[in-house]
Image (cartoon, rainbow, N blue to C red; front, side, top):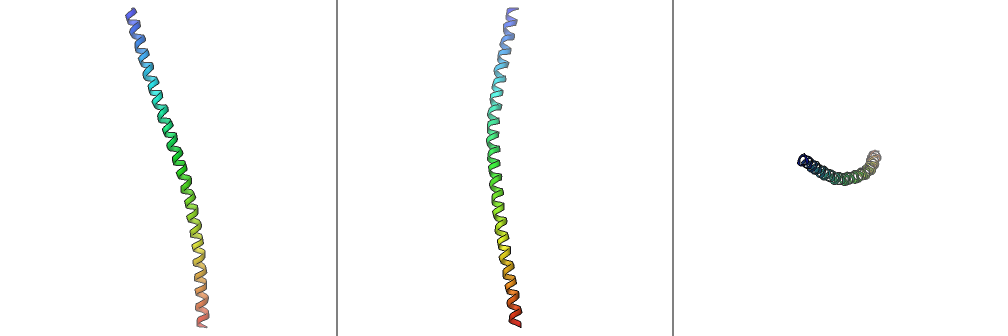
Length: 81
């Protein structure tokens, strides 16, 4: 009976060691995942900033094109008159 109890205790202790090892592994993976998510969030913020800059440049370009088209129209009307 003592041997059976001792074997059972040893199995439980081994199970506990494996459980703690699994918990440590999960904690490590969670930390790595948190780092990856932070990196992705930073990348998303940077991407959105670049899109805003690009959008602003396109709006400036559109305004310049509109002025040029208007000026060309005025030039053609005045040149033909």
